[in-house]
Amino acid sequence: MIKVNGIAYSVGKKEILSDVSFQARPGEVMAVIGANGAGKSTLLKLLCNEMMPSAGHIEFNGKRLKDYPLNELARKRSVLTQHNTLSLSFTVRELVLMGRYPHFNGQPTGHDLQMVDEAMLAAGVSMMAARTYETLSGGEQQRVQLARVIAQVKDVPNGWLFLDEPTNGLDILHQQQLLIQARNMADNGFGIICILHDINLAAAYADQLMILKQGKVQALGSPKEVVTCENIHNAFGIKVELMKNENFNCPLVITTGRFKYNS
Ligand SMILES: Nc1ncnc2c1ncn2[C@@H]1O[C@H](COP(=O)(O)OP(=O)(O)OP(=O)(O)O)[C@@H](O)[C@H]1O
Image (cartoon, rainbow, N blue to C red; front, top):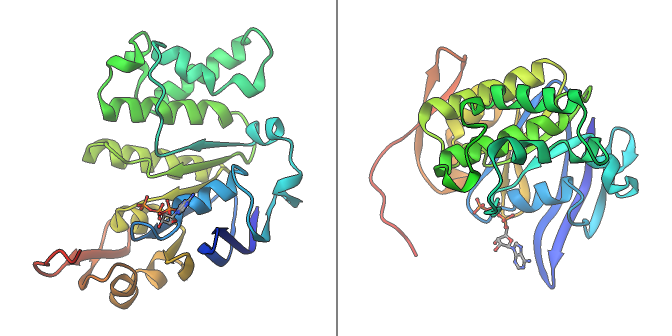
């Protein structure tokens, strides 16, 4: 369980997040949506212990996040960030194996290698295992990074995945496959916190949805509670209509007109 209690984050006088509180549970997908600059990535960095909140605190499995040694945290949760700038000439298999680094000293065990194989299968990259990472397309690289973070926690009971815009660069099939993979992992006891820009994907796959606006929680609840015309207009400044996504029994957002770009 992750409990976030009234956290804030400031840079100088600028408050980027303020009074953010929520709980995320194992077995659930939580999606975070919001306009550019709303504070989503900043929130994820605080959840990863990459940065410290300037107020409030975060509990991870009953213990303050700041009290975890980094290597212990790395064995319990893995993180897909937006910018994976790694450009060295690793093969896909070697890169996915990096996800296992927190689990072995020196040489990977047979179990580590099995986790790598299973993660590559889950992310649909097994067929490119021997390819050099930097020769892959953007979407292929993104799926390899997903395999790396899956490998890190695949065998961890109640492990956590933090994903920052994981569908970036993926085609429509691979977007769905990624969310199905996240959903399956949640159904098997993992906790998933996922930043998404596609509201319809978020509504279809998340148990809990949070809208951030200018660093504050604007709405929090089930997709049906949160995805309303009013909330979307308030958060993104765009008028939308709602239909029903019959396949997922959740709202489906459609935009309603042409818009001028206001700079
Ligand atoms: N170190 C920093 N110094 C100053 N401003 C910062 C710093 N880090 C983030 N910000 C600002 O804080 C706000 C939130 O940034 P963040 O990256 O969390 O937004 P986001 O919701 O993830 O946006 P996007 O959807 O564009 O990725 C932005 O306005 C950003 O410019």
